[in-house]
Image (cartoon, rainbow, N blue to C red; front, side, top):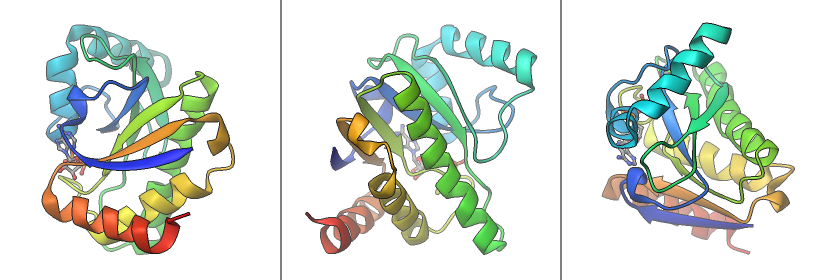
Length: 174
Ligand code: ADP
């Protein structure tokens, strides 16, 4: 498995699945969630509503999968990151669960290439350095990672890109 770090708009990436930093309602919101629903179109929202009707949304740390509608990828995996408000250990574990559960769903759906944004570091205010460490470590340690060919960690700003690349270089260069 290859981990790649890029600075990009995740809605423009052509991979099997992109991950959305959603909220528990699954009905769309701001940030990356808004961009995905805007560009992906109604098909994504329709499937999210079906999931809501069946299981009442998505809990923090969990993940669900839908079509990617008009986006270049095939699937969107929606996961709900924790809001950072000082309750640190619990929040870190929940963020880790987002990455783990998204990767689990990817494996279940035979997804080989996946792009993941920096979950919780926008509106949910998770510190970027702590979030980056959890992202890279969780992907790297995932037990079924050999079943995935490529994980693209997508940064949206220069600061995140710098944090991610230096962490990967320092700790995970093989
Ligand atoms: P959260 O509510 O989980 O914090 P946000 O969407 O506000 O979700 O932010 C999560 C991360 O996604 C932030 O680092 C933000 O800069 C980034 N982001 C926002 N829009 C995009 C996009 N179009 N592509 C990739 N990353 C994005």
